Length: 431
Ligand SMILES: Cc1ncc(COP(=O)(O)O)c(C=O)c1O
Image (cartoon, rainbow, N blue to C red; front, side, top):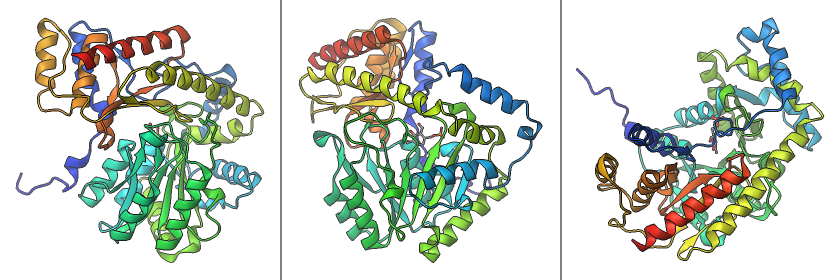
């Protein structure tokens, strides 16, 4: 190349959830039967949508208008439905302050790309890697993070958050993921109030990724951030269809800009996001046309509750299964679709292994050279048991552990999965 065409932040674009798939596929080609516990796609794990939801989608497909472009911000009906839902929750939101994207993946890429290069967003550690990678790539530096503490049920360390903000004037916003991926933690109201008050004190905006808002099942009720920000703290609330219907293949998510006009700089930033979407024309039309019919259907709340109940029982079972292993911390998830396990310091080493044979052994031995000890654990788990999980270090985390999902729809299979992973863990730690 005549010039270096590589973006300075390109090396920060990592996504271990999918990154591990190529190696898992290679193991499959060597004869290992793979169980995919790496990705939060309920449909891939066998969830079947109820017929009434499929009927709504089918009816919508037969409307000619669903084949056209939609307005840049999104279909009017969809935005009015969402604004009306917020009104019934006691919150004021104009339909004009909602912007649709092709999934939150698109929304996340856009919000960090159009942020001033000198502005940083502090986010949780561990964190869903799309946020941490997009933030690191935009600022071409490591994501500044606040700690989620596994020894305190994954609650955020508010002193750490406050100190990092105080001593890092480039921080312009706080990211929360609530309910959280990968930890399953639901931010308690009192903690959210403290975060809002820090944002207010330091004149920051908040990004609240609430894609799992309707997948909350713990003792701590989920509180949307817009309930707490009053009329002054600007917020980007992210919601979508991927996890709650669930319809990840629709690629449909949106941002609600609460208190958009409370700060002129925030207002201009939001306008730049609408303009950026205009250059792309609009988000996909079909799922937006489904939203008004689905969200106002009397069966929808029960549908959400039934799904949440299933994940609650999965979370309890996973928690009980891992509690008995010495040296690990694995708080019970209260929301989202995941269960994360953390190993005590120094419990994992760079020499542990279990016996493998032939080409599988050769492949794994090349793959684990120089990797973090939790990635080593994950590769041996994959080769020995055929279960593909994600190392916690892949979530921009300083902790060593792994994340599995709560998604297996078959009760017996889920129980078997837990037994296989816990048996493997005990043997591996002794090796
Ligand atoms: C916290 C979080 N935000 C956003 C996304 C992406 O959602 P979408 O399917 O809307 O792109 C995910 C996907 O797993 C997620 O876990």
